[in-house]
Amino acid sequence: MTSPAAESFEPAVKPPAALDGLDVVRQAAERRESAVRSVFVRNAAAFTAFDAIWDLGAPCVGATVVVSYMYFMGISNAVVQIVIIAAGLLGVIQVASGKICHGPGRRMINFWLWVALALPWFLCGLLGAAAGSALPKWAWLPVFLAAYAAATAAGALAGPAYGELLVDATPPRRRGLMSAIRIALAAPMGIAGAGLVAWLIGRWAKPLNFQICFLVGSVVMMASCASMLFMRDHGESADVEAVRPSVRASARALLGKRKYCAYLLLYAVMTASAGFIALLIGYGKDVLGTRSEDTGTFAIAGAVGGIGVPLVALLGDRFGFRLVVLLGLLGLAASALIPVLLPASLGALLVSYACSCAARSLAGFAGYLAIELFEDIKPAMLMAITAVLSMPLNAAVAPLGGWISDQYGPGGYHAVFIASAALSVLCALGFHLFIHEPRNARRPTVGLDSARP
Image (cartoon, rainbow, N blue to C red; front, side, top):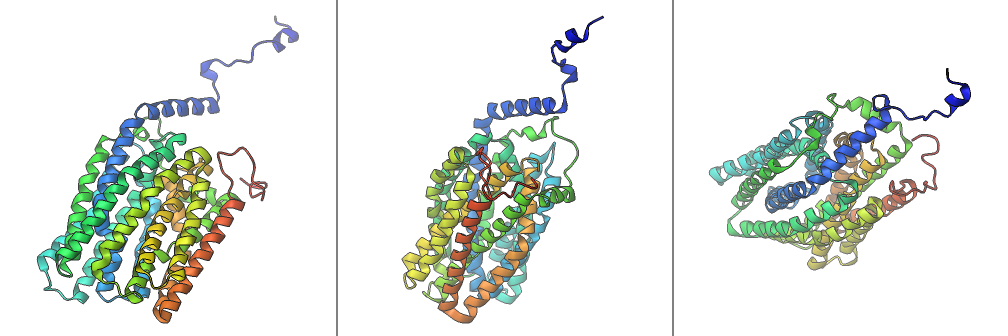
């Protein structure tokens, strides 16, 4: 019989069978991180190939071409913004992305979703090229809007799931490096794609040039999806929980955190402040007299603006992604003021468009910041819930900006640009004060986390 004194000195080491839940989770996480590191180069090559080839075709169906096409059909600024927001409202189905692309088979589901995004543009371009000018603008508009809506819906389902694939395939300290590599190799392809847009727009008469753009771009985009077949997805392994995540439970858990509520408000303001970018094309048309043939010039400017993004993205690995978001927001503010300070210069407008596209890409790293802040939520679910909850503010702000520019001309445009710059600066201040860097051991000074997580 052992004395109490002897019992008190027995080693408190549990046998493997008695490991508690935290030990099991920790060991599973270590095994998964080791597996991710073992195929990181292979996955990085596959993701980069997909992004690069996709970016070669994407400018042909990108916002620059789509907005220019709507202007060609005689749609006003306010209606253009309403169409963009209405299509964006389809993004509410993003919340289903995490449930659809979950566990075994999610890589192939994501593959087919990207194909489904390109397919409506392929059909729109094919039908348009076949019909030629037989259909009047008013008759062709519903076909275009249907293709736009279908592609937007597919993108809403594919985007968060692809982001989760990317996050799961990348070690946390290499996410900035992965982004830098992808952007650095995709940026030249984007510039080439923008050059392709310029050539296609100038090669054929309207509206055939737009429809051939849709056709060529969609074929290249569908071809890029083959790269996804070479990815190695550890989220398909048996270690992944079989239960699909609940949208309601995830949203309730997030909204119960003061830190997330602050992040959500700032994210919504950030995306609203970036809405002025679409109006830069309208400003060129209405104030500087640019034509639809200049669409390719804007596309090239937007692609060139992304050249410097990889260098800034690398800062995310070293200093955290909050710094990258802050730089993006300040860049948005500066680019919005360029047309106000140099109102009669097309060159300045193109510089503004290039800088704003680059700054928006940097601000988009807020998604990585959120994933590190709220690690208990499935990444696809987190991105989708945030996008959906931020929609009401965007749905109100964007059409208002379009209406003001329609009603008040150059002065209205300048008012919208100044308001966007002010919102970007306020948003940057909010991120600095209320959102702490998750990689920092220091606690935030404002104390959003003092009462609730």
